[in-house]
Structure formats: structure tokens, C-alpha cells
Length: 152
Image (cartoon, rainbow, N blue to C red; front, side):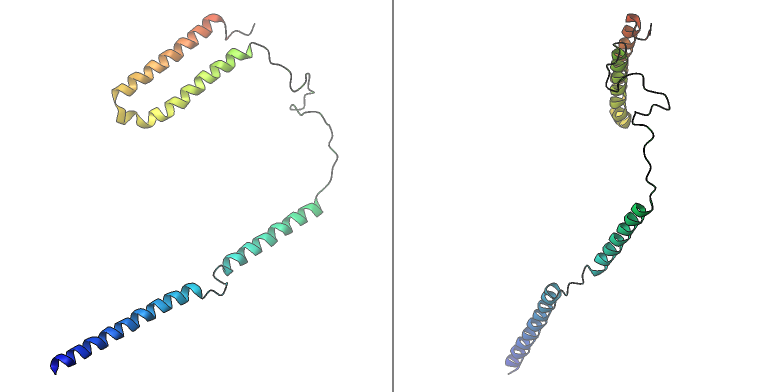
């Protein structure tokens, strides 16, 4: 008799636990499926207010602006009248300067990552950077010897 009573209690506990589990599932499903469309209501309200303010500022600015005719249709060169066409060719003496600029610009492109890893790489990284700088310095000496820095 005691055994049958224990089995009945066990079965009742099992049924109660199944009901609790089913209630949890029903509540979870109800929370996910029961959407009244107001989950994003506050965000949509803020977006709408921002859109109205932006539109109002644009309309106000367009209605209050002062329309002026441009004084000149020429390019502005700090008040100096242009002496040549905007797409005219550059003198050949600017090309060595441009190449030197690119050389030293590439130096900086390679030196920045080097600075970040030199402490981990050790003395080998320092030797490699000095070799790279030596090549660049030799390019400067060559350009100087060839007269790339003279303007006359």
C-alpha cells in the first residue's frame, strides 16, 4: 500500500512538473508572438521628431537665405587673377620633387608600423630600418648631385 501511495505521489509530482514546464513554454511563446507593434515605438517617435526638425530647418534655411549673384566666374587664387589655364602642364623640374616626396612619404609609411613592433623585434629591426634609411639617404645624395634641388 505504501508503495502504491509513493507511486501516486510521484506521478502527481511528475504531472505538476509537466504543467509548470508547459506554462513556461506557453508564457515564452506568448511573449514572442504577442507583439502589439510598440516594441520600437519610442525609437520611431524619436526618428519622426528628428525628421521633422531636419525638414523644418531645411525649409527655414531655404526661405530665409539671401540670393546673391557671384562676383566672378574665374577661379579664386587668393585674390590674384589667374595667369594660366587650370589644367596646364607642370614644368619638368617638379617631377624630381614629386619623386622625392613619394620616396620620403613611403619612408613614413614603413616607419610607422616599424615603431609599433621594434621593441618586440629587437636589434634586427633596428638594423633593417637603418639599412632602409641608408638607401633613402643615398637617393637624396644622388638627387642632390644631379641637381634636383636647384631651381635655375
